Length: 378
Image (spheres, rainbow, N blue to C red):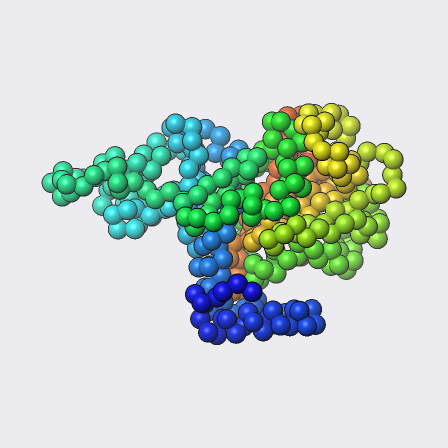
């Protein structure tokens, strides 16, 4: 275990006990899911150093578009400036630290602090303030713009930031997970796009429980989601769906595939043949990626620390509609040791007929809405 001199003695003891229990008998102490001091340490030393997912570029397609998101406990404005560049700006006026963004999303040319009226362009540049020359005549405006995230990377349209000035690149942090994400995110050269607004809800749970659920707990399907299979929402029988692979992709990243290793017919998550024909990047992928995509029924996993994904076919109305592939990506934002804010986005490939996007979105909402067939089980 790496040096933990920055942690309190109590938290260090807790982590050492967890390491011992895990290596000795495969268990972990329940205290790691509800301890306030550990929660604060995670915010400072885990989310403060790891890559944090903020949003997708399709959420801010136009110049001036923005959404308000979080990296750990810090609030950022993810904005496309008038120059077309995407930035993540800390939502804090550089004068007194007051928030400058008052809506969750919108389109603006500038942000104004409501305390003293400092004005910033949508690229973060300070452009004015009341009586600026008299009050701050010697201040250089170019040095007092909104603070950008130290590092920002765009991975096939998915925007991540790191609050650490130095450290592993996003691809280095993803480790082997990058290979699998590229396979699914890059099937179309046009990429993916968000369908609708993200669902958001407060859940009484620890963020690690949610992240771990997607990173390898297929076991809960046998009981928790049995009814989904019983009503025919899923085209693959429950026991058959458990056949496949679990992959530890390194650096805390993990995922699972449901695979039909005996079928000679292409599956591609049950996308119809006419949609598979739009996967123009498929021929340029490695033979291994092509083979995996061809036999994949379900793909589920977690990008460390708290971004999870699920690609699978489900029906919005099992009695009348066939299962339709849907792609959900969700973020488990830690609010407290026993509370998370849940963000849930639905995606589809951009160069896909609008009718199919609508059908996929309908399936997603019917199954993963807050009263959905699948979601309410969890």
